[in-house]
Image (cartoon, rainbow, N blue to C red; front, side, top):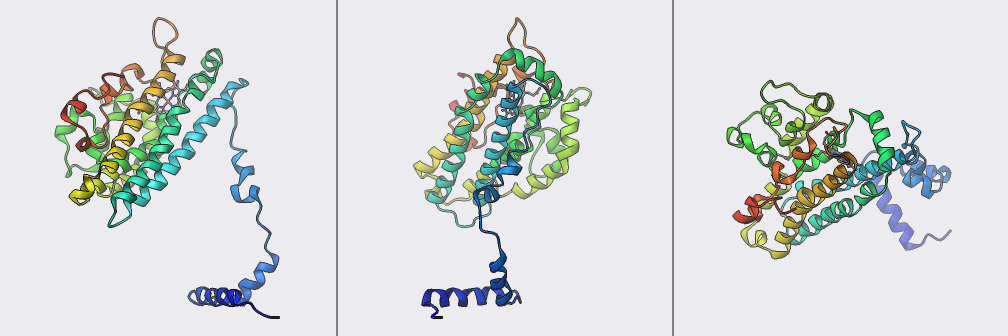
Length: 310
Ligand code: HEM
């Protein structure tokens, strides 16, 4: 049999690849004789993916709730995937940084603009029933959402504004985590007592969060941005992308989520208690949380007015 030059070249490359790991090319080529041809369903793992939607009640709209949360978690994973690439790259150009940021922002834009799937897509009466079954679980306990925050900015920008002055780069991680803005959802600061929402979440993820924040301490998006040469930092396209991302995550998405919560949990004279039990009407509003990933990118006035006009 005539071996075409392209095939010969491929064989040489394969020989090189396998000999580098002390493997026999013949055996690997023979294995190809018996390997299954690729199919869409195996590659995308559709069977596994479509078997993850388990309702806990008989109410059909619970399926909307479960699946939309799963869609969110998949997009969170895509976001973390992009952030990791920026974080672990050296010699970043403005083009690379802004291209990645725009990808990340597009994913978050999608989460924001699709939130009406929650807001308009379930019957309030059904939600009010199945929520009792999922209590005390809450989206608050999404670890990937928290990781996006840790990977986006310096830890100090996620500390509850009331305690920022007491915390700096030398503060132990454990102590800093105790003062994150989201502790306010379930901690009584006078007694130190935490709600079940918070204790269950920390029991599961605290160690993972400490390791993750350590990893991103100097390579989070904001830290990477601050390291860039002055001319790259001033690139208008990059600055626009940074501001867009910050605003989308910390104002637009937060407000889309807040309005959905309002629709389902604030139907009478008074807001009903959330599944996670926080005082959510206050806790979740951006004007109270004042969560800003890239403070250097906003004017003093913009920082002061954060979340006030939404
Ligand atoms: C009708 C739909 C929803 C309602 C009524 C709702 C309500 C709430 C409430 C009241 C909280 C405050 C914590 C608590 O006490 O439970 C919360 C937190 C949270 N929820 Fe949702 N939520 C909804 C959908 C979603 C979706 C689809 C996601 C996407 C994963 C999500 C992610 C989160 C996150 C990340 C937090 C923490 C926010 C923070 O700490 O600022 N929620 N939600």
